[in-house]
Image 1 (tube, helix red, strand yellow):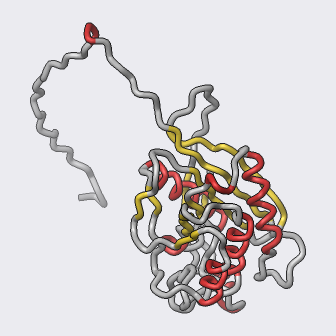
Image 2 (tube, one colour):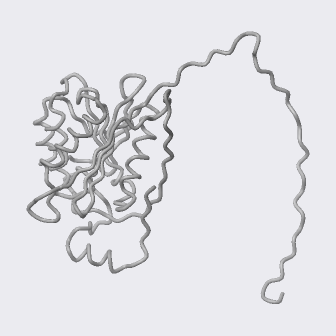
Image 3 (cartoon, helix red, strand yellow):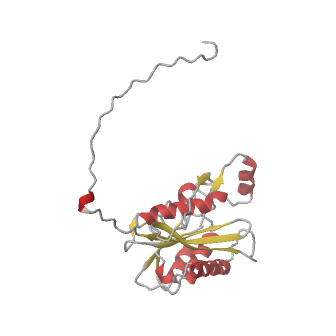
Amino acid sequence: AGVNMMFVPATLDGYAVAGLTSPSGKAFVFDARADGFIRGEGCGTAALQATANPAGCLIAGSAVRQDGRSASLTAPNGRAQQLLLSAVLADASMEAAQLDVVEAAANGSKLGDPIEVGAVVTALKERPRSESLHIGSVKANIGHTESASGMMGLAKQLCAMRRTLAAPNAQLTAVAEHVASALRGAQSACTLPLQVTAAPGASLNGTASSFGLGGTIASAVLRTVTAPEVKVPASGVLSYRRRGFVWRLPLRVHVAWRGA
């Protein structure tokens, strides 16, 4: 579970004074207009079940690392992010060529977004050129939900993968120069979808990442598994009988309020 609620204005004031939040009130993730993140509230919960015959969405692997030494608090360590993606793929016993979609932790930062895109491109450089990798971030839709951001990214990725779709990047009109430069350096085709895109195949493999302000970075590999088709024997065909029910009118309830 992940929850984030905003009750104290002082936190937002501190971020604004430090120049971390966007004056426009929008998160231009991967966009040339990127000028900081926006705060958001969120609450999400996922139920996990251990099963020998999974169907639906499977968490194939996960990894948690530390961002380590970097130039400043707002300057992520690209090398650490590369090692994180390599570690999570190893934990899932999966190759980079098998990934279809990536849910990034990008939040609209001029510096952080290009570093993360570059880390993804470098870590997944062994992908074949013919297969496109879709990269997106839900923070452009709902803002940075901070302690709930990992759960929000996971939920968005699951919703898209269950429908074998790649979700579009909101607010994106012109790709930032450094982001575009990182994408051009990819040996495989990496895209930032601008509309709902149907992914190839009946199943998908993807990642969802979340990076904390304290330096903790985490990622999970998700896999959609098609449920086996259930065949009903001819002798056991289900039958249904339609029934009607009378709509009962609600009773009138008188409530005493303020002495009335």
